[in-house]
Amino acid sequence: MIERSYVGLFNNAVIRSFPEDSVLQEYSVHVDGRKYIRGDYLVKHQSTNILFEAKQRPFDGKTYEPADTKIFLDAFIKQGMEYYNAEQHNYNGSTFVSSLVFEWVRYPKHLELVNTKSWNEDDDGITDFYCLYHTDIAGLMVYGNLEKVKE
Image (cartoon, rainbow, N blue to C red; front, side, top):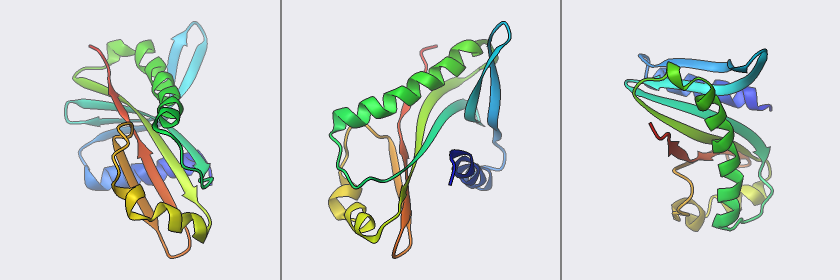
């Protein structure tokens, strides 16, 4: 699977849950001159904007320290801030930048590890959301964090 497919699934959930929201997927952000960068996903929910920078990867079975998770997610927040900074004049209301990670849990032994009570209920102080979708043999973790843009 590629990142774009996962963002499409996420978008489907957003528009089914919040049919009045406005969304953009894979949108161009003008930086300067002829340079453009690509934002992954933007949601306008009532008076709140959320810019998502998405990544996908297979679950490797490792348990990471909170500091490592923070470093991993901060890179996505930084990238999302580039989108906001380039076009901040286009935003009104509250704005957040969010990392959005899709982690494929491919093997039953990894699913068993991820599905333990301690994994699902511990607050790591870094991630703001986490969900595991799974069958008996594989799954998908969706998680990330949000950072409010200073207005």
